[in-house]
Amino acid sequence: MPQNLLDFDLQGLTAWFAELGEKPFRAKQVFRWIHQSGVADFGQMTDIAKSLREKLAGAVETRAPAIKLAHASIDGTRKWLFDVGVGNGIETVFIPEDDRGTLCVSSQVGCALECTFCSTGRQGFNRNLSVAEIVGQLWVAQHSLRAAPNRTTGAVDPRPVSNVVMMGMGEPLANFENVVTALDVMLDDHAYGLSRRRVTVSTSGIVPAMDRLAERCPVALAVSLHAPNDALRDQIVPINKKYPLAELMAACRRYLAHAPRDFITFEYVLLAGVNDTPALARELVECVRDVPCKFNLIPFNPFPASGYDKPRSDAQRAFRQILQDAGFVVTTRKTRGDDIDAACGQLAGRVADKSGRVLKRIHKEAA
Ligand code: SAH
Ligand code: SF4
Image 1 (tube, protein in one colour):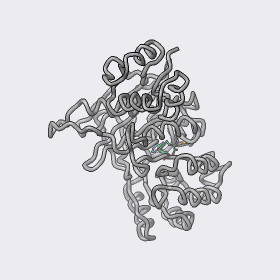
Image 2 (cartoon, helix red, strand yellow):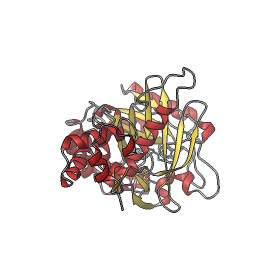
Image 3 (cartoon, protein in one colour):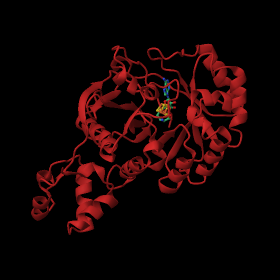
């Protein structure tokens, strides 16, 4: 099997080149060709010595997951469905806005954590994505978006992806090493050069891995809270039984000592009649009292046989108002890309769902 160069961060590529007797600057050159220029073919890497090209020929490849489907919405939202093995698909979504372009990236096929309202969780765990499969989502998005000029202005944006959110399929902190290596590539100035503040890991709250992330690669952190007390959170986010709220809040405080931003984003999926009452909103204010934070409210995205309903708009408003009155900054995810069935946060549903129905919402991430 040829070595897939998308599996390396710069450190890894440099070490691998050293084994071949090649100097670090050669690794840097190749890394820049791949990630900055989107070039996979050594023939096109014009400043690479012929002797190196010959050495690598046949021994390496630059292989992103195969694209099964690519869609573009009239509002500019883009979606890719990637093939990652027989019967498996993962999705990546690009959401353009005036001042940024956000890519929602998947980290696993399925998820073992089984949050009850999440179609990825309902599907069960299949496998971790490799570094190449995670980085490959960004590689494909960045370079194919760059190739397509802006439809209204005709301009070509050299770096259309300015933000990454690890909010696609899977729990990123349960695929820790591969995710951290992929984050290294995203942040590297010789690759995508994304700011730490513009790369967000979203976790359901795997406490020890939050501490490891703070040490290894502190990027912006979003924590999927969804309930303000252990009794309710145990039911809908089962990992809470292992890492209950008091531990989670303490981990958030520890994380902030390393974080590139001075707040945690708490995500809160509003499930009608389950966690969207005014009393729970008031309890939520108390729950996060000691953690500098913002809230991102996500109206539940229904999927077949989920057993949950979308929150009523008056319930959403009342919930939001209580948080705002307590002094919190609150955003509510808006829907985007309806015409291409783009969604984020529960993307696997459409892949797993044999009924042919699709989930029709996408969030606008307020980074
Ligand atoms: N595993 C990580 C990241 C992926 S999910 C996590 O749980 O944080 C990204 C976000 O989408 C999470 O906040 C998740 O709770 C939310 N989500 C999952 N299913 C959803 C649904 N059906 N409707 C709305 N949001 C959902
Ligand atoms: Fe996994 Fe996140 Fe879905 Fe929970 S919400 S099952 S952690 S992907």
